[in-house]
Image 1 (tube, rainbow, N blue to C red):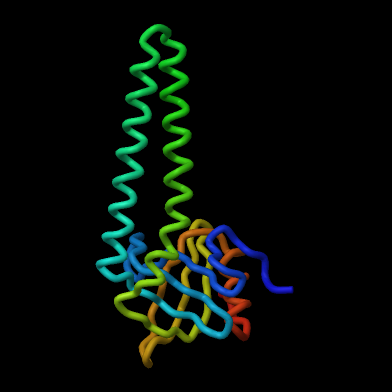
Image 2: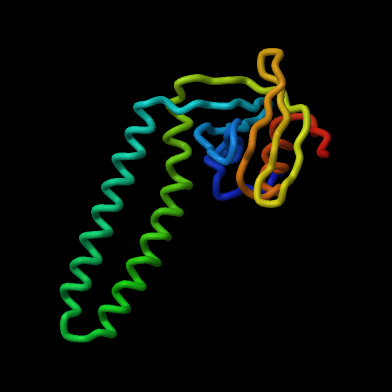
Length: 163
């Protein structure tokens, strides 16, 4: 029995995380598979595909709320319900899309950087990984909780020393 499967898990043997090497931006993807950890830089084509789908989702949701508000001319309560349902649905769709687009970005990388994990440090809302890539030590920030990262790194190989 393997580690618990998180929502960002694409398959039982592949975990994907947003990752960044500078500040609080997360333009890269950390891919953890059985026996390997890699930092992926998404290609321009994959980023374009994700942006186009995001725009379509935004336009579709705007059309739906416009229709809902247009249909609710008769009662203010219906207008308020329409607005609440719109924002709840929009945030749900955006959260779902945020999880789904990681696999699109990871499946079409512009560059791949194999990593050797040296250690991890938790800062509550984000985790920092110390790793070696091609003889150079780098630090990678991962947003999210420690449990998900620990489960993924356990899949990758020998345990790392957490600080």
